Image 1 (cartoon, rainbow, N blue to C red):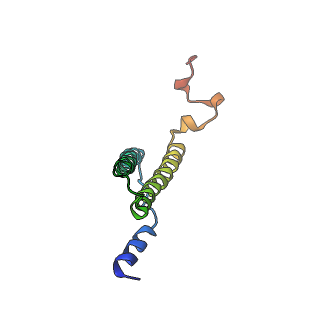
Image 2 (image 1 turned 120 degrees about the vertical axis):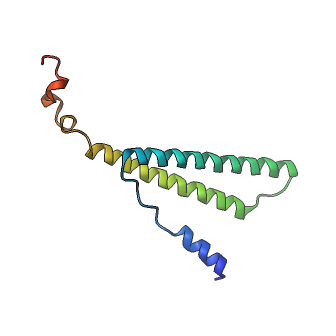
Image 3 (image 1 turned 120 degrees about the horizontal axis):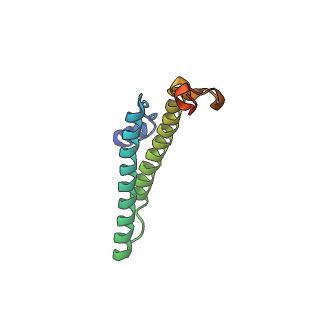
Amino acid sequence: MQPSVQSSVQSSAQPSPTLPHSEEACRARLIVLRDEMASIRLRIAASDIRRQHLRQSVNPDGFHRMKTALRMRRREADEIALHLAELRRTHRPPCCRERAGAAHPKHHPET
């Protein structure tokens, strides 16, 4: 393989980055990923409109590159969303982990 092709193949085969350790960091990363996905979708749409206006054929390399970038961000967003759900479940206060019948006294109207 050529060096430029080999480095791009290796970079796309990298595992997803480490997951954020806090709920706030997960939410912040999800916001960034959603913005990036919206930007990629906009670039795909703009290039398609430009292509139609100029009556050109689809550039398969550029289209594939953008769709791959979008797919990678979707995958990372899904992983972070699952991780965020796990963080929420494991970091609940003890009173919220108990059954509804044995909830913390401050949640009971009688006390």
